Image (cartoon, rainbow, N blue to C red):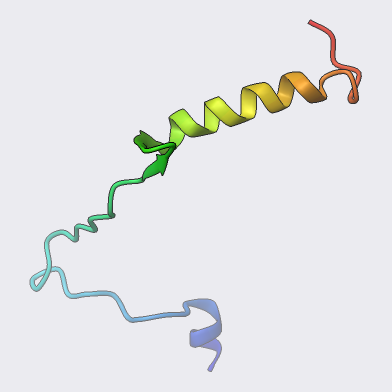
Length: 62
């Protein structure tokens, strides 16, 4: 029982059975106003105007 608490999860794979593992994630694009954008572009387009709108409230000076 203590072994499960110290090392939770599945046991290690045998090195002879698996050399590497690969995980493929779906692309992180979002649709906005009929266009496809990468998530980072939308993050910039939303966060910069919000930051500029809230700068006085938080007392930020440039």
